[in-house]
Image 1 (cartoon, rainbow, N blue to C red):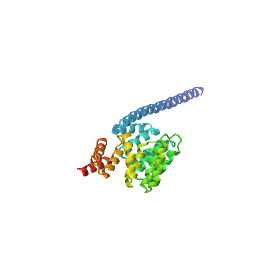
Image 2: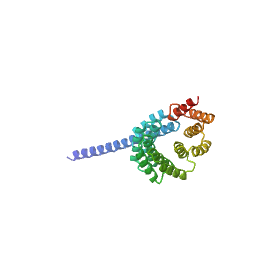
Image 3: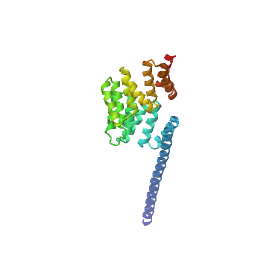
Image 4: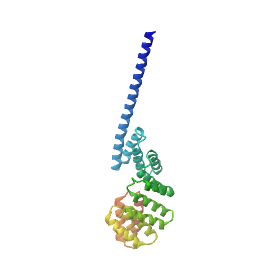
Length: 257
């Protein structure tokens, strides 16, 4: 009987050791997968920063399978989807980012931008307001610009100009806010005001295709054909001809022939 208990005790110890070793092996395997996931995240982010969206998407999807609870992976994937104009997928990824980190201010901002591009204006405003509530948010002018433009799209130019003005108070010479103000002036027939904003903006940011397009429209309205052609051609040199800005610039160039 004593021998039986001794064997039973040895077996119990052996089973315990096997369980401990198994758990340790599982933890090490998980850690190894997590480390590999972080590498794919870094590679994918580097591709994203270089503008290689196809490889960024490939690497970040690998990272998402290995470290699905990492908010940075979903934020980067959302950014890829925005740049590829896959807005519904972008919205999904930014919402997942926020589920994992409810204080991720830039995720609220990019979610707002995706909503704005999708025409979901009220949701864009709500997401931007969430970004503004986060004390770590370093670029509030971006959220204010989104809110302003959403109000303009909703048919309230006065409120839009108020928010865009607040964006410029937060960050003077913010190009996107300035160009949107100029766009509102243009569409309201306040060409001189638009021109003043755009001349200064294009001088400071000559590669801003949207501003050069608007300046070309100003010159077109003033019947300054040479100046208009110069701006529209500059847009064609800066953007994909199939983009909205490219198609519009080409349309004006065709009118000037």
